[in-house]
Amino acid sequence: MAVDVGRTGIWSSSRAWPADAGAAADAAAELDELGYQALWLGAAPPTLELPEALLAATSRIAVATGIVSVWAAPAATVAASFHRISAAYPGRFLLGLGASHAPIVNRGGQQYRRPYRKLVEYLDGLDAAAAPVPPEDRALAALGPRVLTLAAERTAGAHPYLVTPEYTHQARQILGERPLLAPEQKVILEADPARAREIAREFLHMYLQLPNYTANLIRLGFTDEDITGPTDRLVDALVAWGDDEAIAARVTAHHDAGANHVCVQVLTGDPAVLPRAQWRRLAAILG
Image (cartoon, rainbow, N blue to C red; front, side):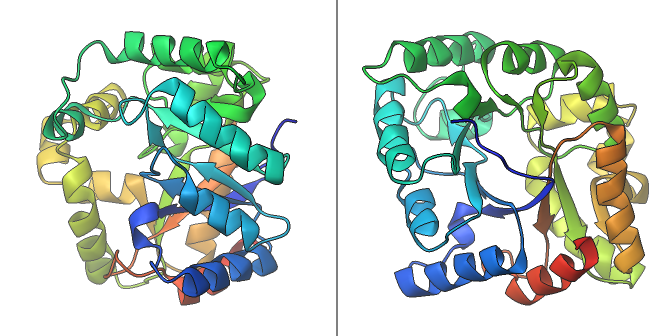
């Protein structure tokens, strides 16, 4: 059963969710009640306990991983976890996969080599599992043209991270009309330019050290100077901030550029805490 993620959803790092099961369940249930159509969990462990727990706490919202790294566990292990969840919550779980990044994989004790081939082999493994993961129930984190094409050919579609509406337009041209295109968009509910950019720069620092992202930004026309700054030009392109109209306009820009779904990540000064108050305000902005 294909997963319907709707038009908008929330993106949140798995690490920000509280260890207390009751607190996590309460936060997920509120997202469901607020009308969000999907919850994307970044850096999801391959055993998928958190997506399973959040699905159990909700009745309608879809849950997607954004992403499970293909270096984290064998495809057969992830396929088994997928089927445990999809059997209990049919049509509500989307398995998002990705090749991660060389510094992260190498730091974990593996060697990051030939990531495109790794993705292909992993999809082959999901197809060959005792209980295969259907293509319509999986998606790929994709930035470059080759992985976007792979996502279109062998999954439901693409989940690009750290991108702009201009990128979304280009990705739609590569994917074609049918596949899912679900870009992530960072937002800060802050009207003061200095404070908003301060929060954005602090958050972006880690991502701008990762070659997959910086190479994609160069393809989009940004310069090394933009990235090393990072300049206001780059910060404002990657992070929407300002009043309600400015936030809504950026999400609309992705939809107008060809996105089926936009995963909105709310940034605050404390990334270790779920921004529940901001999620409530955002629901009204996007509603």
